[in-house]
Length: 267
Image (cartoon, rainbow, N blue to C red; front, side, top):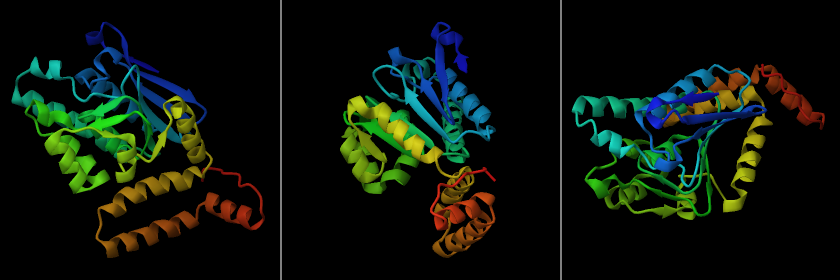
């Protein structure tokens, strides 16, 4: 699948590649460091909506072309439309894309190289998992141009906690991949030359598990995190009981007891 945009000289601004049960969406505005233009946000929203209905999908990867993962919103485009109504709609559309990632039925993995700044860092934080190259850097640098990165602050604060989030938000400083890993912004760090292999390894591990368990777990995890502790346990118990009734759960337990490899049916 290729989504095109007239605004980018008819270049394909979002590329989609499928290998087995894994789809990779690549932000493809390399000359603009994959800045999230109106058109690219629309393409992402459309792709997420289309892929959400694919029951055969096991994992989704979001990557960036060229030298960077994503440098945030397209500031030139934003300055060309100095209207508060437009800005409200823009940030609402961006938030909708982040919510679509949260609601996406299978794990979404950010594949990060170069820089991920402002809304690009937001995109990393919004993904379920993130694998970063050792040289990758992260920042919410709106403060440097007179903007507090309010919308990036939402997933960032949930990923790393308030102290580091506010440090980054108030200063605009970059953190490296090691610090991002230590604080939970990314889940794995790979050598720059091994990023592709690390993504393949992670998505391969996920794709090898029961699709019922993975889809159940993604939906459950997000919901329980928003509940008080007692309600979270009650909800988790209900979900786990339903999960136990799935064919895959029975097959997995039988395979474990029988010391054989399970054969998942997806039911």
